[in-house]
Image (cartoon, rainbow, N blue to C red; front, top):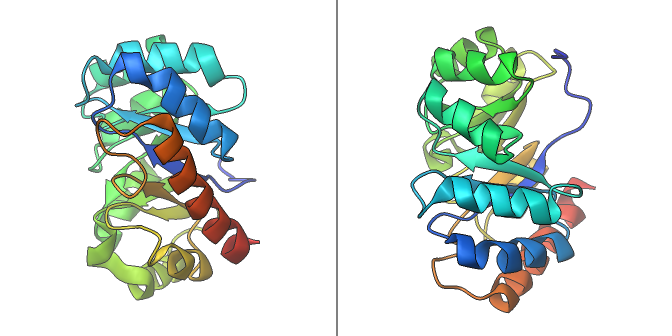
Amino acid sequence: MSTTVTTTTGLIAILRGITPEEIVAVGSALVDAGFTAIEVPLNSPRPFDSIERLAAAVGDVCVIGAGTVLSVDDVIRSEAAGSRIIVSPNTDVEVIGAAVARNLRPYPGAATPTEAFRAVGAGARSIKLFPSDSVGTAGMQAWRAVLPTEVELLPVGGVDRTNLAEWAAAGAGGAGLGTCLYRPGDGADTVRDRALTLMNIWSAEAA
């Protein structure tokens, strides 16, 4: 795996609570709106089924990921279902190592510089700032000053249309968008409208 990130991640749609029956319609709406990365948290109903269906439907134009990945077994099952990115709420060096060994891209969660450096040492080149409001944009910029230049930082948790532009302007490599984009039961048209608004905000500031 390369140690240099040549492109930033951008926005990741987090579809916590989605069902396999909904996943293709909602995922297709997100792709229509310009999203190129979608995460299915593993504490959603039948998550591996959803990942498999989504990967088959839009995996050629969108990177499909698993979220709330807490074990090496989760990594293995996520890869088998079609996941290419592995997102975690914590910094677990075994999970990171398993992802890197399989040529998957890990996004471990970190809330302190110590956790961020531990993640980098295990092979991660994308760090999920979680919860992002505990770090803040000033904190992210302070981390940015000491972490290797090839490491990108992505806020997750509390990022929405009111502060997405601020995170982009501060140098975030992307952001994970959850309830501001999708809540269980939301239809594809509703998600598409929200996705377009968020993508426009991000594109205007990150350009």
